Length: 525
Image (cartoon, rainbow, N blue to C red; front, side, top):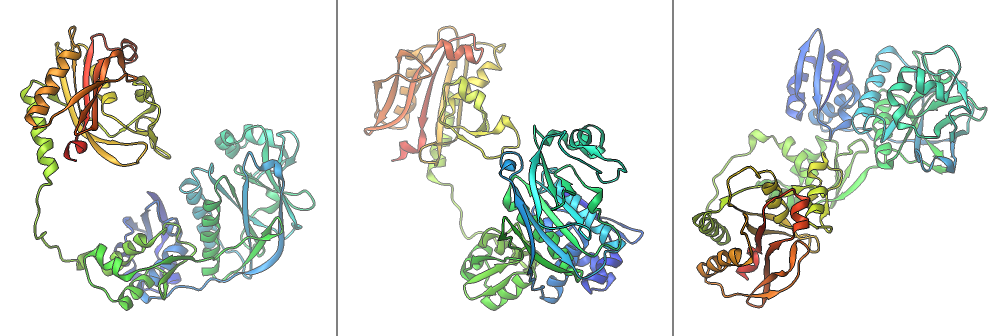
C-alpha cells in the first residue's frame, strides 16, 4: 500500500463534487481513509491502482463514479525527437517522453506532481530500478534531445539543488540522491542532454539545474527511462492524464524518429454472460455498460475500451471486478449452496491417512512451494520456478513430496528412533504443468531397508484392494539395485527404495532412510 496526503478542497474542486460527499465516495470506490484532519486526507492506495496516487487521479475516479463520465484524452504531435544511442542498451535501455504546454505551473500542481512522481518511483518503479521520471522546464533547451551512456568522469553539470558543477562520479558519491541510488549505476551512466549538450537528466539519479521545474514554468518535458517498457508507458500515461485534467495540452514526441504513442486505450473482448456467471447475478448489457462507465471504461459492441491510465486491467475478469464494485458489494444477496458433497477421492485420501496412522506413521504437512537448494540436495533438477518470488525460500513448485520428507528428517535428528512419517499433499508435474496429489511415507532408523518399507506398501495396497507388482529400476535418490517402480493395472503409480548415502549426507541425515512415493490420482484410474 502507498500512503498519500491530499487537500480535500482541491479534490472537491477538481472533481466538482461537494466536499461533504468526498469521504463517503472514496470509501465506496475502495480507497481507505487513514485519517482526516486540518482539511487533509491521508489515504492508502493499493499497489494495483497507481493512477490514484494523485489528487488528479482521485478526482477523475470520483467524477466517473458519480457522473458516469470520463475524459476523452487526445494528443497532437510535436517535432521533438529523442535520439537514443545504442550504448544504453545494456544499462537502461528504454526511454519515452511527452511535451506539455498551454498553462503556467502553480504551487499546488507542482506539489501534487512531486508527490505523484515519488510515489510512482517507489511503487511501480521499484524505487527507480524499473522506472524513473524526470520532469523538466525546457524553455531554454534545444531539441533534439540525446539519450546516451557516459563514463563517470566524462561529463560535468549542475545537479538539482546544487550551485556548482559536478562530475557524474562526484554526484554518486556526494549528492544525497546520488548516494541513495548509486547502487543502480554500474560502469556507465545514462544521460539525457539537449542538442547543445546541456544536461537535462542523469537517470535514475537526479535532474539538472538547467531544466529545473518551478512555479511559472510553461514549456514542460517529461522523460521516463527504465528497464521495462510497459511500466514506462503506464507512468507517462498517468502523468499526462494528470496534466490534461488540469487543462494543459499534451503532445506526443518522437523516439528515434518514431512517434511515441500516449493516450492509447486498451481493447478487451467482452461477454456480458461471463460477468453474470462469475458474479451470480443477472445484469443486462446496458446495466453493465453503465457500471463500467463508473470506472472509466467504454463499451462498444463486443469490446470494452480501457482508459490509458488503468494499468491494472488485463482481461475481462478485471472488468468484472470493477462491475462488482460499481454494483455494490452490499447489494449482493448471499445464498446457501443447494448441495455439497465431498469428492470420492478425498474419502480415499482420508482412509489412506488413517491406515498409515494405524501403522505407526505420523502425518506431516509442508508447503507446495520449496526452494532450489532443497531440490538440488534431493537430485531434482526439472522443477518449475516461480517468476519474481517474494523470497528464495519459496521460489520453486515441488514435483515430489520426498524432498520435504527428507528435510523434515534432517531437522529431527535428535528425536527418538525409529522415525516414521508420511505426507499426503499436492505436487506439480513439470512436464504436464498439472497439479497432482501424492503420498510419501518413509522410515528413518538404523535398520531401515527395502524389505521393511515394502511390507508397509504391501499392507496398504492390499487394504485398498489394489493388485501391484514391483519392477526393478534405478532412481537418482536410491542406492543402485535397491529401488523399484510400482506398477498397478499396468500403470506406473510410484517408486520405492533405500535412499542413497550421498543424498542422506546432503541433508545431514545420520540414519538410513527407506521411502515410498505414490501418485494417488493414478490409483483411481
